[in-house]
Structures are given as C-alpha cells and as structure tokens.
Length: 392
Ligand code: APR
Ligand code: PHB
Image (cartoon, rainbow, N blue to C red):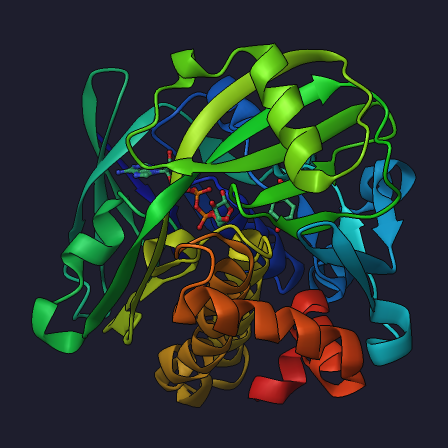
C-alpha cells in the first residue's frame, strides 16, 4: 500500500487529462495522472483528427505543437454535398480562421512525450477505483497498480476519465440532469494507405446514406460510410467499401490498402453539472458528441482550459469564483457544440425515405446553403470553433 500526494489528482490520460496536467505545470501546480490502460494502448486508440484553431493555439502556448505544425494539414474550407451537387464552405472568408487535420492519437503521443520530458508523472495500468472525500478539502483517489492498493491524496480531483470512467458515476445523481440521443445509424470508418483525391474534407448526403472523405496525411485517407446500427463488419469487403464510397461521394478515389476498418455507434450525451465540491469533470466524462464535425477533443480542451484557470486562481489569488462557475461556463459551450454536432448529423445523414416531408425539408436546407452566405457563415464559425471568449 502506497500513499502519495500531489495538488491535483487526474484520472485518465486522454487528451483532457494530459492537456490539463501540462496547463497546471505551466502555472507551477503539481499533478499526477492515473491511467488504467497501457501507454501503447492509449497512443494507438484511433479517433477523429480535426483540430480547431482554438485547440491549436492552446497547444502552441503549451509548447507541444512542433510536430503538429510540421505534419498537420491546414484546411481553409470544406465541402458539403447533396447527391453530387457540392457547396464549398470557405472558413477563411467567413471567419479568418482555419482547422488543422492531425490524428488524435498523434496529439496523444505528443502530449505524453512532453509530459515525460517535463517530469509529469503518469501512472499507466493503474485503475482508479474510488474518489473519496471530494466534498471536503482533502479528497483522495484509491487506485490499484501492480496488484497493490494505493491512495493519491490531493486538493482537487479531475475526472478526465472518459465516458465509462468513475468520475461521472461519483458525481451525486441529484446534482445534474442527463440528456441523450442514440442515433439510428453508425459510421463504418476506414484508414487506407492512399493519396487523398480531394483537397479538403467532403461531407456528402446521398440517397443511399452519408459519406465523409477525410484524411490523415498526404499518404493516408480516412473515410466513413453511414451504416445501420446492426450492420456487421464482415458484410463490407474492401471492394464493397471503396465502391460505396465512390458512389456516395461521386468522385474517383485512389484505392490503397485498407489497414483499419471498424463500426462506431453515434450518440449525443451530456450532463448539465460537471462539478461537486473538489471533484471536477472534463471531456468525454461529461459529454459525448456525434463525430460529425469532430468536436470531441476540441470540447475537452475547452473544458480543461477553464479548469486550469480556476485551479490557478485558487492557488495564486485564493479566489474560488472561477472554480465555482466552472461548470456553468463549460456547459454553455457544450450546448453550442451539441447543437452544431447534432445539426451536422441530421443535415448530412439519410433518415427518411426519398420524397417524404422530412427528406424534402432536408433537401431544402442544402438548397438554402447554396444561396445563402449567412447560412454558410453560421456553419463555418461553428465548424472552426467559436472563440473561447464567446463563453466568458
Ligand atoms: N482509472 C484510470 N483511468 C481511467 C479509468 C479509471 N477508472 N476510467 C477511464 N480511464 C481512462 C481511459 O483509459 C482513457 O484513457 O481515462 C481516459 C479517458 O480518455 P478519453 O476517453 O480519450 O477521454 P477525453 O480525454 O475526455 O477525450 C476527449 O478525445 O479521446 C477523445 O473521444 C474522445 O473526443 C474525445 C476527446
Ligand atoms: C476524421 O478525420 O476522423 C474526421 C474528420 C471530420 C469529422 C469527423 C471525423 O467531421
């Protein structure tokens, strides 16, 4: 049994926990991260790959963006297509901002490396089992590691432990309302060694279902197809995937070797309170957005930015106001991002039979998109990410 001590005990070494630890260290505040998976597992978990302008700025300030700028692809727009008719959304014109395409697991690798270089302790393969005494000034985290039971004593606990973690389960049930939508479709995603035959991302509505053409680099494509929730991956040979992508996207694709293929369900989920006493949730622990728009990581970074500010003000100025308002401030942005992710999902996915009232309303949105600069701007400013200051 080991008893260790730090100022902020962080559960989870995903983008939220790692970014928080680096932000705190910059302010001279110590933390230890407890992560139940191995370093290799965490570094290879495949997720989305689109960074808002805001997120890149945060990584710049932390000094963790050197490889991101070297290898990431800066995009100044994207395409939204309806049965082959394409409209470009010009981020530069509407927002003077851009996004960067850079795989999330690359972000995680960079953050972990910098944490090690800067001597931030990450305990891998350590399972946090309980968060104790969080309504007092002396909370602690019980965790098991190498068959031993341990305690991490701290002043604050950050529950950055993802959707299935113990952070949200520990938050008193009566302190929040829960909201969720489970969508009646999933995404079949592939990664392939092939040069993208498109210069920017394409979000395509098609009467057979949605398709998304994304990329990871000049040599690796990331593509997705809408499939039913009960779809079996065995039904999708590589040939069938390529044929359906070309059909729905309406373009010829360079068909390299597919080295990853999986199906992911889609949900919107959130709670409207993210704190109790000295326990603060951030990232996927408090909210999940459907992947259309790739907001998950960006929202997690916005949360921990607020949390780091609050904790810093507590130690430096003995002021708890920012911490008291932490949840309120985060939740305002979460609602905005939930709305945008839900909007993009409903806009682009096939949900109703061709010719039905719902489907014709959906088509009308695409017609409007082609004639209205205002509508394009609304999409652009949400897509690149509203400035942090908008919610301050
Ligand atoms: N003890 C220790 N670690 C835990 C525990 C536990 N009991 N439960 C969960 N974890 C770890 C998980 O193994 C995972 O590595 O917490 C981490 C949470 O990381 P993410 O799921 O990546 O969540 P978050 O950091 O909020 O991610 C924000 O990035 O990874 C994406 O989909 C995610 O888009 C979202 C964004
Ligand atoms: C991705 O590249 O994985 C990606 C990009 C944009 C999205 C979703 C996923 O909207």
